[in-house]
Image 1 (cartoon, rainbow, N blue to C red):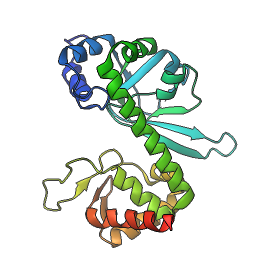
Image 2 (cartoon, rainbow, N blue to C red):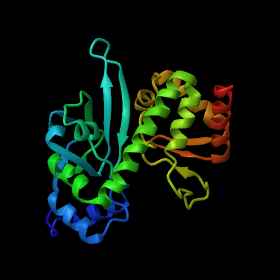
Image 3 (cartoon, one colour):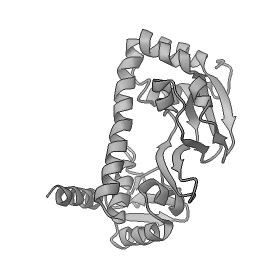
Image 4 (cartoon, one colour):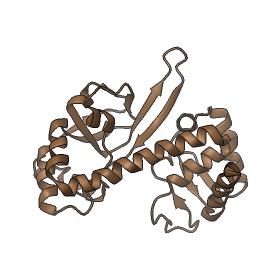
Length: 246
């Protein structure tokens, strides 16, 4: 990316705050950014999984979902919701094989992309990048493990509670009279998409959200969700874990 690009400063900011590039030397960060090109991805665009064999993508603006879809029923399960600073597709990057998933832009996205071979060279030649890559990979693996356990062990309202808790923003007490905690990655998602993230259906998610609202744990408006009582949300998730281990 050229320094004269209107997205240059924003891209640097996103990379600095990404787990992949956090605390790397500034010269390496800027050199790395120069390898990327910026591309727009329109809302609803399906990104061909073959492309991720050749390219590694990083959203700078907007979110991308990674899903599996049953071709017979059309039922969809959202495996990951990727935010600015995440990369895709990490499986194709590591295995050098096509990863049969559906990648879709949830909104208009601006994404950086670089040749996958170049990203693999960074792993081989730059210990600082490699040192960050392993915790990032571990974080993604932990998320998959927890999601699988939730599907096997917990009911919908518990899975929903845990999804919300995982997405509470760090240092997210909003400076407002409500003193709520934001969940910016999922706060404007439709109930249908939330259902697809926890292996449920919209009607059940609707009821579960109403329960959490009536218990004054979360609050919602037409296009926004936030956590009103974080301690109670944590308590509910811990209670579910305790009973699943008995």
